[in-house]
Image 1 (cartoon, rainbow, N blue to C red):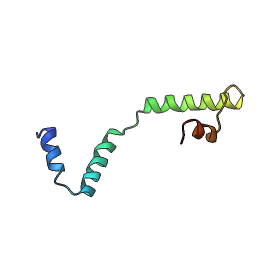
Image 2: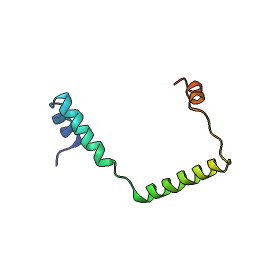
Image 3: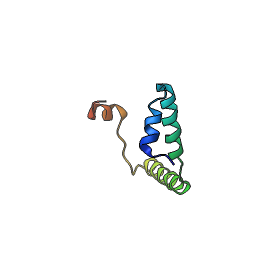
Image 4: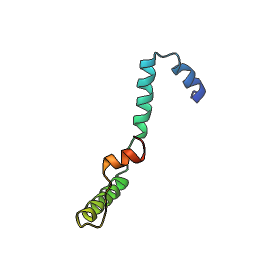
Length: 71
C-alpha cells in the first residue's frame, strides 16, 4: 500500500478539477450520519421547539445576531 505522502504527490499531478473531485470523494466517505446521533438531535430539536412554543425559550432576531457578530 502506498503511503499518504506518495498518494499526495500523485494527486498533485492531477488537474485542479480532478483534485477537487478527489477531495470531495474523500470527504463524502467521512460524512456518514450516525443513526443514534440523528435520533438524539431530532429529540433535542423537538424539545427546544416545544419549549419555544410554551414560552420557556427566548429567541434572538437574526438581524441582532448579524449586528452582534458583524456578519
